[in-house]
Length: 197
Image (cartoon, rainbow, N blue to C red; front, top):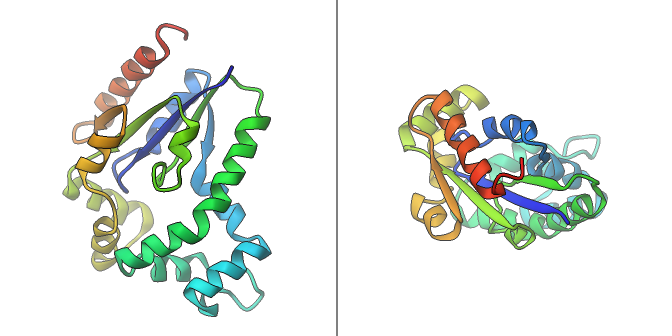
């Protein structure tokens, strides 16, 4: 019997730093961004993305220009929603395949759009990660080498704290040190698994 924990949260909240910790507890981590990148290069997916965002999202050799797609998709909330509506069904189908075919008992679904994609329905428990806007801004500028405008637009395109507080089984706040944040996550995972690890 597989046990799936969904991990989601705001951009720059520090969610990805928890995935390594989860592996220490025997979790098999599915990186949904990585799944998305693989799925986006499929011919049928590129076709529907071009229909939604135009052929400017393709490079000369026909591969997807992820930077161009991100620029188009994060230009407004409506465009972000269009991207999600277009790509998420393909990603969800692939995630279901991975879960079905993995032999590990514990699975962590690292999914920025956990609820928007419907992937939360595959989870036994869900964890949301939130942080103050200033902390998130500093992290994504450093991590993704973004301009001030790009970072602010990406944060604005995301969900507020209330979204995660209402939808997730558990919410972790990451406004302190990384050590505190990871320790809180370890305590939570032990609680979720009820001493199974």
